[in-house]
Image 1: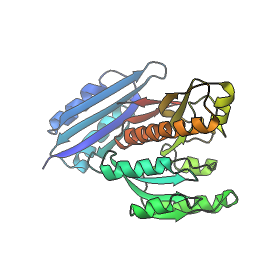
Image 2 (image 1 turned 60 degrees about the vertical axis):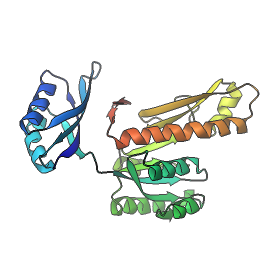
Image 3 (image 1 turned 90 degrees about the horizontal axis):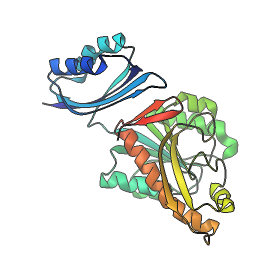
Image 4 (image 1 turned 45 degrees about the horizontal axis):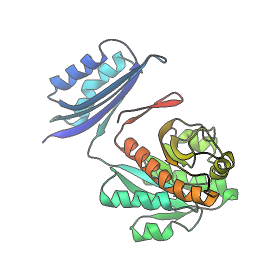
Amino acid sequence: MSSRFIITLSCPDRPGIVAALSHVLAENGFNITESQQYSDLESGQFFMRVACEGAAAKDRLSAELNPLAAGFDMHLAIHEADKKQRMLILLSKFDHCLIDLIYRQQSGSINMDIAAIASNHETGRHWAEGAGLAYHGLGQKQDKADNEARLNALIDEAQIDLIVLARYMQILTPQFVARHEGRIINIHHSFLPSFKGAEPYSQAHKRGVKIIGATAHFVTAELDEGPIIAQGTEPVRHDMSVADLVDVGRDTERRTLARAVSLYAERRVFINGTKTVIFD
């Protein structure tokens, strides 16, 4: 029976990386079905994503690739292409991104399973229950330590791969972010780096912008500073109110977040310092 894997790797750039990987795969009977690579001349780092099919089991392929990874000082991972990652969605009062992700999971347009939903409001409960998904109520701002302890327990118990802040309006502690580094995605209702922080639509309205946007990015300890994964924009008119901008912006937010989650689900996102490499 044929197995499908996605191999992701990053390492210092040098000659022979692609040839060495291709040789190991060919020697073990694997056919490469997709391959993308990027050499960053500024950082000297090399990034690669390879999809392949073959008869060998994951353990055997891993054993064959381990010497190559050690020789090139690689961060290398082998992922089962047909195994869906598990997602935890966090939200507060606004539910448009949650509803969109639930629909995309149910329709099969996103290759990820929603394992749980958690919120410091009741907004998402009926959507979760209607979709047969586990819902967890959280406390408010003053309960931050307890909330994060409960979330850490949930993440471990439910074997969560990705944490999605779908308009979760609570600032996470540096300790929580460090524990889950590289697997928390936030949707910010602005085209970063413009209009950071609270009420970006009001800020945009005051500046009289002609486009508004949304940014999906990894969460870091610095607010709204994490590596950007996806961005979207929509044109707006001078006669639009803040409420009009919010209405237009919600569509942009949900599309942009869904794109970022989909890229992550397919192992197409690589963190490269303060930036990302996206193999799309």
